[in-house]
Length: 497
Image (cartoon, rainbow, N blue to C red; front, side):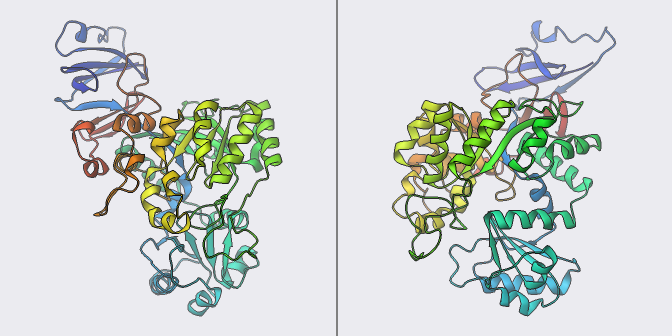
């Protein structure tokens, strides 16, 4: 057994310096620095080892969880051509044309285009012109659509429309096939997990559409040990999870780092792809369009069947809902079944639905950085409704449990970015966007730490060390806050001390 004493720490809500003893993965004791109480309990006479670190007045805080991550997509993003700054279809084609000159990938993949505000349209012909025989795939920043050339369509076995763009369910299946062609190696997973630890992250909720309950324990066994992971299951693997007896919260590896998470159901699309299911039609879409209000990808009766089946097996739900009609549909289902589930994103909520989040005990898993990424798109396509878009404060006031995340790779896996966005609603020279929806810092921190507001005796020794009190710095500084150390169960996963 190893004990670790953190000396001369500052804790939120407590005055004076404290010594904190960590033992067996939990906070075992906390007392004023230098007092007799602070030196008790540290004997290693039982053969255990004892270490001590002087924090020198630094702040000791609960560590972060990212409540929504697609980790494999985050890992592989580094290998893909960056399209984040492209502002037109022509610009995206130009970036890919240049990449074709320098890269030898058998399938050249770009990531990060956001076409909602482009003045021109994607076409398959434009990609075929620069790469008639070499497969190229451009993935949207929200992961909800892909733009392919004919060679990529042939390779992946899909029939492409004239614009070369696949959306929602058809695209998600194609993305799975693309990922299987060249999955990232373990070193890339380890590097990404270590990078998350360097930003104070000890845990993620994994929503990758993959065999998470086998893949993640294998990664831990191979040395990817910087994170705790709640491993979700998608509907196509639900019966396998049930057959194997997995229940939400069950440990899936001997180290206790991987636990069974929730059933992930995606009931609608996204704002940037204009497929989020809304009560009102999207501007500029003709009435003849098959989905003028977006797409409901899972019918209410099928959603109910999935949630009942999962509940019978002890698997809790997490349901993706972005548009206001999608959120109403999911809340209706939760209320009918008496389920206290999680709604992922909750980006546009009907005015009459906010109170239902609190009344039904629903958790709103939200991504504050998306509010800044999407403010211009929302102003255009949700015009007149943005007072209830990304409405984090309204959800909090209504009694919803908030959980903050990144949706990486859609936004970076960095909780400080989410905190800065949540408390400021701005990141550039423009005024804050709907500033009444800003969250108080203490609320945003609790939503990033699974409700922990300070370091308490008996709590998990999942902790971070920072030089400054987050309450004393600006929102801009929050976004870049350095982390001196991260401890997972008392074990350093990042340490500059």
